[in-house]
Length: 335
Image 1 (cartoon, helix red, strand yellow):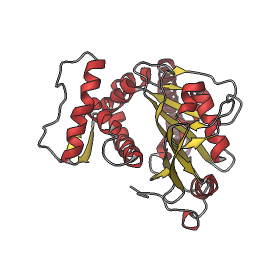
Image 2: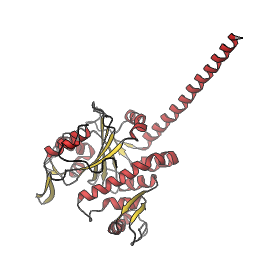
Image 3: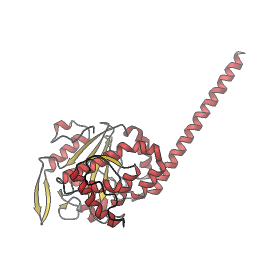
Image 4: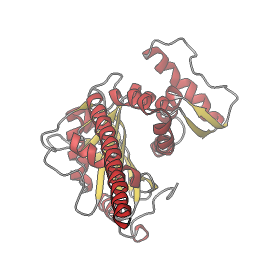
């Protein structure tokens, strides 16, 4: 009788093990299929000068530059209208969103000094990344690039975003929608907000794009803050959107992205996704307050920057040192 019980237990254990292995194989198969699907839809560009550099640095930091260019079509025409350095640190368990203002006067390799966003128009994303590394002494060798249409598609893919707008901002959203509607051949007035509205509003893709492009309220610092607010809202809604309609989300976003993140790196990032989603988000913009002055160089309105103070800040914050000991403090930590 005892032998039969032991044999029965071994049989049950064997079935349990086989079931677990089968479920694991199914999950891995689905995961593999999803990564293959993602990679087949995005526009991958291998930058030869960056391909051999690792995605993650030895100190556990992944730097990816999010580039929003002002091209009306996919491609590298136009300048980089938005540049947000996304830094993921396994050491500090935080994601840093750092806007780099486009009017910073920098040395561009192979060219004379110019605004930071000019580097993109001279040599695309690779030259922009090289320029950032040269001037700010921070390694960034991966990028994700979106244009006007891609940005609007991204917002729509997560179901829109909820943001606090003043009535003045509402007025400018409608004003910027004029150009977008013409470019997209949409009827005049499409997606206009109620001109009397203010407060918490739900914005779709074109409306959110118009909100981030606003240069009429505040300085470029205010505009980059609006960009980060939208990006933060997208990040907050992404997990629920993935569960609700993963195929629709991927189909809405992927064809509009251009990046140099390889397939193996995408596998690695996907394995870390569950952990990264729980990280706090820290927002900031460069240059820091008190570390720049307005100037005119060759008839260009630019920002002359104290690079040493900004480099010190980036090293302290992104690489895990105490930011309170640096040149400034990040905006909206933990927001």
